[in-house]
Length: 445
Image (tube, rainbow, N blue to C red; front, side, top):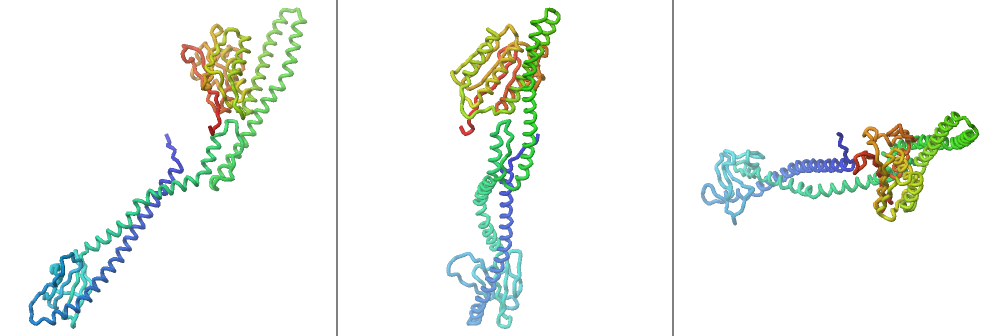
């Protein structure tokens, strides 16, 4: 199974990682440059220190009254020396050293210029025709510590900048994708029969070609559906008059003839014409269900409509309908005419296909759940899934058009509702139940 990822989440993560990586590269580059510049500064300090101390050391050595050998410079107070020095003659004899100097880190004989051991950076300078030399040493660890402190100082702000940048990136992406989110919401809020064009004037340029193609597809679908609905409605409408005329003539023929065989055949033809007439009425209802909006602008109480429909069918099937209303009113944006067509088809379907000696249960709860259940044979699962299609019947022995549930499905889809079909009916060992929630509310409520 392919896991779908969010564009906003993907952009946010990768942009934040990219910015963080660039910052890290920048910090590393800054650290390398800072190390180079700091080495130059430290070397300059070594050279400057040597040149400052050397004249003083030469004067001190030359002004000694007698040769007292190696002398250690006294410290005014205890402190850590980062720079230590030795003053020696050309043969390497030690004449003067700083109080914390370690002669072992220096070479056997003095050298001029910069040199480096595994632990120290050394600078040497000569005086008095290169008879006296001073060498100043600095621990390399001191330099590494300074570079490390500088790098940490550059890295520390990242601890705060990374979450700030993440929030900033997410905010910018969310703001940039706001028109796309509005487009998504506008499409989701549409009914199943709304094929109007999508506004593309406020979309980013990258999405405009896609939505133009979508609009062209919607326009083709709209034209195809309008053509189909128009054909269905016109065909059913045009059949009405010829069918009514044929029925009238056939009934007149039945009254005029005395031949029993002719009357029997005329009765069969009359039943076929009545079936065809009912089919044309169903086709008109289907065209209305698919073409017209299933919603109205104002809320309507659907309970009285259901009561009126049940009373009409009680005249045709006395004692077979049981109506259960748990609330006095059910307010909905579902169009009253669409609800009447929906309820009639569900009740008619239950009466026609249910067991003749058992009642049809009709219930409407206060939450707006409409249930119509009948007893009878169990509908197999493979047939149950196909009953929403046109001209499909669970029992072909029973007369019917096969589009009653297709009409109900069209109205439910137009209202954004889901029609649930079950067999056997809940609480029974057999039968069939159709369930639909008819409450439709404003999306901003």
